[in-house]
Image (cartoon, rainbow, N blue to C red; front, side):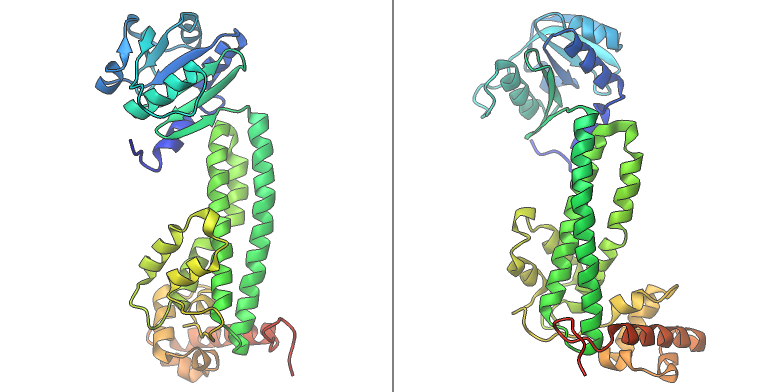
Length: 358
């Protein structure tokens, strides 16, 4: 069964530390007991259930779930986990469903999750560990301390990748201004932007397991990933292959579909952009540079790039020439000219290797 992309995230929120469900799981483990708990009901769940007790929708409480877990069979909760529907149930999922689990409880949990589409939690009596099965995924519900340690390591890596991305973007600006730009650097910036976004998504997924304690992580994550989606979009719009019929949306979709394990293959990114080779000289439309001008609407950025049609002409346009662009006006023309002058000065006529020339 295929689950919606956000379904797993919603399930993780339901069993995050601090929730009543997670507290109940902790109580069961403290009692040195195992358990098999189906987080949802319906015909698909009834089809794999045999025997047990009908509790007539007994209201869910932490103590009540821990008490019924003392019986050998599985427990079935309502879809929103506010009621215990059945206890001491024998689950009989399709035995032909493949599973890599060795323990009988985990095997049953995985097959039940796959067959019913409902989340199933298996609590190991020997290891005192709760494992969540949902669709084709499996995740141990680790302690907040372990999760926090993993998140801190990931945030440290994310910070390093963001620094490398910022350096690559700065180099891109210098190369654009100095007229030394090639497809290679567009690919480099897109590659690093994708890596930062993917790592950010993994940190976001990890943070869900912290429940109400994830706000600080979210603030750090927002700071480290700020502006990257816009950067990626603008680089694609600036450099997408001129001879390619593909749209910006199509290129972004193709970039997003590259597996993370294959992002190191620059050819995949170049192919998404419609580049025949990386070492070919390239010239941007100027949209990324114009996007950095404070309070300049995107419609005006697009109009300026279209009006000049050539980055060199845009870069060296006079105030009068900029004033001719629809929607610019004299005040904005002066602002754009001042911003372009700063970009030229900061580039310092840098060569392709980053050293000054002339």
